[in-house]
Amino acid sequence: MDTLHIREFQEEDADAVVALWQACGLVKPWNDAYKDMQRKLTVGRELFLVGEIDGRIAAAVMGGYEGHRGWVNYLAVHPDYRRQGYGRLLMDTVESKLLALGCPKINLQIRESNLDVIRFYEAIGYKQDKVVSFGKRLIPDN
Image 1 (cartoon, rainbow, N blue to C red):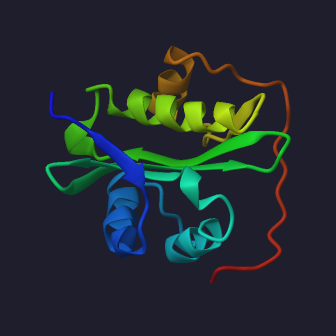
Image 2 (image 1 turned 90 degrees about the horizontal axis):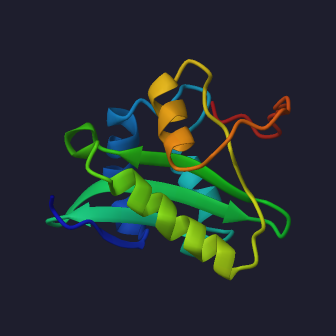
Image 3 (image 1 turned 180 degrees about the vertical axis):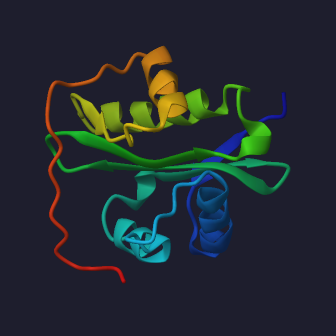
């Protein structure tokens, strides 16, 4: 297993991170990934992490905390590097950072059709909350 070096996202990582998200099927027409990154960098940028292997961005996660709940978005491990523990390592890192901020609980959303990701989170201790997720777009990306 190659060593995954985890560090904070830098602006020059943007194209590589979007390419990673595209390779993982995370980019959707209704979300502009570049706008999502720019928005993230204005709030809690220290929770936006990338993982490098031999200088190549192989993983990324966008964490957040607003004082009540932590959030995890855009967790991605490039298909070439999956099933080697990198997703768990990245989650352990963002969880530690959130805990250090006093975060009592992490929420995340998974598309119900994404069974592999559901199994991944179950395997690392996450459970399905008995809630209904609502959303309302205030600023359209397209």
